[in-house]
Image (cartoon, rainbow, N blue to C red; front, side, top):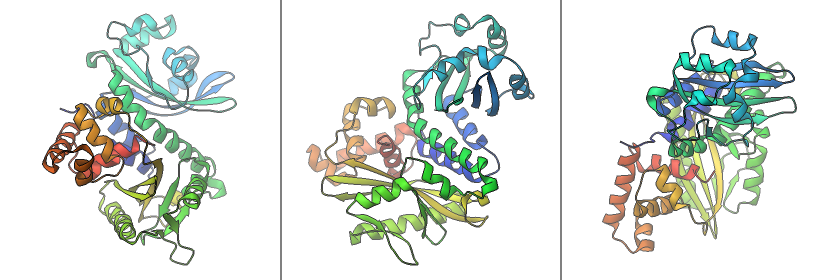
Length: 378
């Protein structure tokens, strides 16, 4: 059985949390299932004095958040202190992924009793962001019966790290400025990842500043300057695929299907991957009418000559070296025929490698696998 499957589903679920009244609970449910977590959450910690000021949590007993809020645990909790000291967007495990390390040996007297009573065996987490007088930490505790987190699991979590940072940042911008009627589209301007929002007619509602800069420098893609306002390509063949993909994502949003569609636009030595995710408009925070549907596109640019890290692909996608080479070509946008030509293999052999990658990682379709591979570039 594959160690990691459904990466695209995790990312789609995370962004879908921006448009519901459930907070991050749907993402927590999926993360908890994928990584066999007992409890955890996203905690806002003030620095002076050190205390928890808000939290979205999962798996804790009723009343835990209130107890934590009113206690001194935020200052003495070893996991929070450890993850707060990390660089942003970098997951780590409290035990260092060492099965010989007992988490109780890492605890101070204030937290050892609670950790022992809860039966914790390890904790993984990351620093989401740091402000002038506060910080946001994501953590996920695991029961000792599940064993320590592994290096491979941390690598998988690190694929999610920039998306967690983006989603939490967007949630904050929307929540903190609702009285100013700021929408998701406007909040996207404060995020460095290039993103484009489409409405149910596949028209561009908003390009954030990063997307505007990316499109301005890209020779192939642009947004039409008319009442239709559509994302288009100067390549007629790719343009048809792009239009079809955006419409398909909108239809999928309406039907509750969260499949990510990934396309590649190749111009000279530059390539752009367009990852399109269905978006449900169940909240006025999107700036679109509640109950409507749309799509969210991430734009990922990279050089065609850049070489994927085959060792990393092998670890993340549980594959042989030959399969990792095939995965590397897929994430560059090559077709099965093109991969066969580059690697001097038969098309049949390459197809077998792709089938193996799908089976090992729990994907039903090649498009799902490619979406996960491309996001490794992000």
